[in-house]
Length: 341
Image (tube, rainbow, N blue to C red; front, side, top):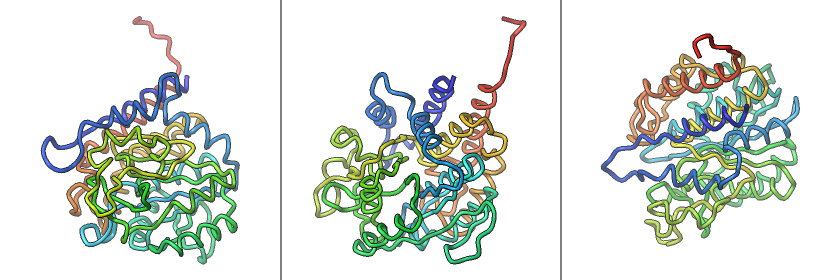
């Protein structure tokens, strides 16, 4: 049964809605998904959800890294990644009893805090007084040496059971972080490679969720992605190394919008634990989260404006996505002996 539900969650998460004209890559999602899930492998959301439910015990810590987009165009980051991180934090907290630590650039703290509260979670910094059902925020430096030192410190202090990235930009093979069109964003983003490398060295479960081939996790696919992404082999910066992610993870979920991948994994965890009504966000939660995120300064990444949309897909469609996702899970858990069939 989980395989059937996950199959359709994966399909829902990979429905691509992108403009037919412009500079955004288009028509690649089904190709990325096919590479990420070879024949005979489990649906991607199921593989990640099962790994997390097996590894994470009550009171374990889970790291979630997010945060894409930066100044000058996106001064407080973009919507994509933040809502999915909060949805994951909610299900990890309420279904698995985990303690979630959110790591991203300082500029994203206010939008992320607003999103978490709108998702029904308390939000605090590490040095604030602890309270129930709260997530902890830890800012990440933009400096490589500081990120490397912080990686060791955080893993020593929290001993996480899993480290997850959602819409977290990864450096390429030359160590430079790029956007989806191949522009260098290295100066404005934290360097996640040190945390993931050390986590893997310690045997900690790692997972990545992304939509463009340049996010943490896609390093798992290596050169298989290079000819799918327009800037995969040649970027628009002097490094010349393309924009394909070099950081690999144990599990990777490919989605048309990274937030959708986060919602999909959350739905599968809730399905496996049998408590979707408690831990999953609904359409109203989603709208409240999106409005809170934009009100605190995050922009739609496609338009770089404070719109009620995510990667160019408007609120109505975002609500519809959550409605379909929730019904896939709810109906999939129900019993029916149909008298009409």
